[in-house]
Length: 540
Image (tube, rainbow, N blue to C red):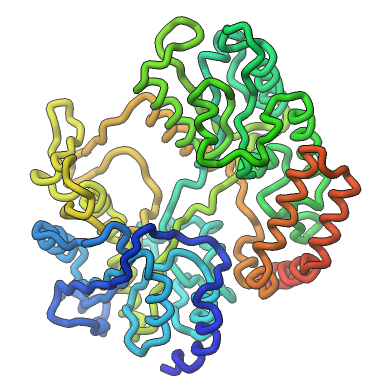
């Protein structure tokens, strides 16, 4: 393999550059550890699929260790044994501390002895260089086989596009909920003011107005606001989607265009500015710390929270845990969680899709043959079964957990530090495809996880949201764009800053247009050309 020579220059330049954000670690340690559950340290399996049934395939993997001591306690040996028996593999684990993973990854990809499966936190210049040098297998032809890979074959096509380079699917993504974005609002405020659940943009406006002007907390003071905002601009991205703006880019007249070049974008900005001018949000939201954002809901200053739904659910948890009284006088304060919002009564509701993944697994050319690749994918597919998800999420039955008298899973090792738990780190080997919530179907049993009204509603809305979630149609092309890889973050910031400045009245429409012209001059025009060239090639 001449991959090392082909990659050397590109990787040296790209070790610290990033195209898409990846996961980070907070540990100050910089170490890697290897654990082998087989006598072979790093051999690639050359067994065919039929032969693999007769004996376990030897597979080497490199994974991120976020907590330290991954699969490193005595009971972890039993966990590894269960994994290997269930998947019919012998696994050589290499664990690398999260804070040194990117450096280790770059070095590993330049070596002649790569693990067959490598976890990747995001698509950066290192990964792009390696992919272009031929370091990874194209997995698209393999995962179409639903008989061999019943889980991986259910991968979402829109998510797969985001890790497709030069027409090749370079990884198996680690699934995250697609419909996670939505709206939470003070249900007790709404009940007191006689407001129903908002369905349209007008309903959101009317609720924000009432929460601001009609004294929902009943203290006789004008001290509440409709919508909680801070310097993080995510809520605007979500609300824009309701207007038909799309997610970053939209298809228009057979081309892909950045969404700020649409009429709907300007319509959305005027709506945001109207709410700002009428006092429905903090006047200084643009400089408020994101860390205190949710506090404005918890302390009763704001009534609507637009972000990932688990944020609103956490505020609700806070009300219940701290027994914060409802303004209606009945029970505790509460939130309602809703998903997609329609532009008007005759329109389809929409919400902003998440990326749908958090990192992915590449299969390297250390898997020498197609049968080796199938063995790797067999492992990743089996790890998505409920048996392995339960093992990775909660550990060993009878030691880490048991089923209690109510029929729910009860954790027995609550007092253990995470890095002392038997299954610590095993979840880093799971793609979670298809994405599931709730209990586990294991050996004819349903293992239920205890839930609350709050978590049940969150799961329900996220699931229902998926059919309304709007993906970025250019996501798969952006990672193939040279302009975006070099200057994407700056281009995105120009648009985001101009939007905030317009909403706050710091610039007018002429100033907004000037910012867009600057975007074009800084590489935006070239970016549009690159994206559409790739788009045309894809449609052939």
